[in-house]
Length: 131
Image 1 (tube, rainbow, N blue to C red):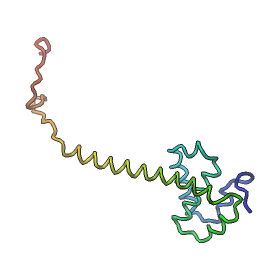
Image 2 (image 1 turned 45 degrees about the vertical axis):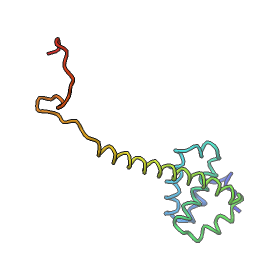
Image 3 (image 1 turned 135 degrees about the vertical axis):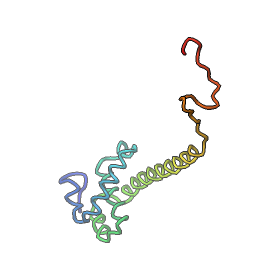
Image 4 (image 1 turned 90 degrees about the horizontal axis):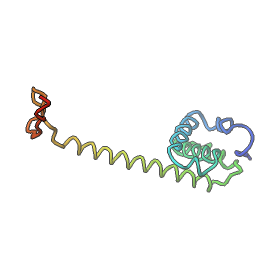
C-alpha cells in the first residue's frame, strides 16, 4: 500500500485521481487553513482528508481503490473531513447572518443632508466661537 506519512510528495500519488480532484483538494486545504484543523492534525492527514472530500464531490470511482491502498485508516481521514465540513457549515452560517444584517442596514432610515452640508432635522448647534 501507499505510505502517506513518508516518501514522495502526496501529489505524486494523487495524480491518478485526476486534475479536477487534485485542484479541488488544494482549495479545501486552503480553506482548512482558516481553522485549527491544521494545528491539531498532521499535514498528511489534512491533505488526505481534502483528497477524500474532493473525490466524493467529483464522484471519483477510482478513489475507493486508491484509498484502500493507503496504510492509514479511513476513520482517521473521515474524522478530519468532518472537522473541515464543520468549518464550511460555520462559514455558511456566518454568510447567512451577514446577508440578514445587510438587509437590516438597508431598511434603516438614513440622515438627509441639506445643501448647506448640515444634517436636516439635526439639533446639533455649532459652538459660538466656531462660526
